[in-house]
Image 1 (tube, rainbow, N blue to C red):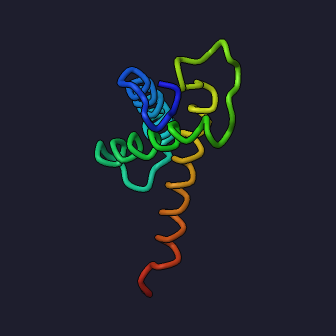
Image 2 (image 1 turned 90 degrees about the horizontal axis):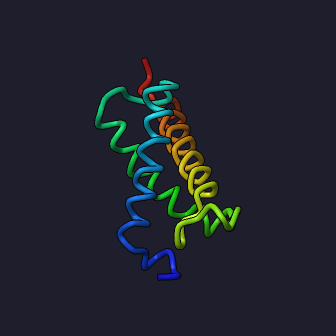
Image 3 (image 1 turned 60 degrees about the vertical axis):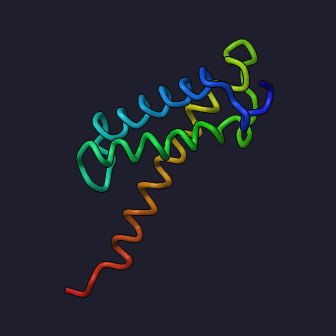
Length: 102
């Protein structure tokens, strides 16, 4: 299929692998999280998948030779990283803004 919304199962799996790797690097490698643990990592995988899915439509189609159907790897990786960094930063910021008075 040519549309990213109606993606095939291999494309879904590629985005899932990209988000799992990016999430693992950020969570376990760089310790970039709000809460440690497997639940936080799995949340990163879900958010990272959405970022990877939106990577090509938002960032464009880079390096035609490095794509698999509608999945372009470089924009998918950058989209996943961007979504994860944005999500963690938003949660950390809201945690400091809405912290109860002590």
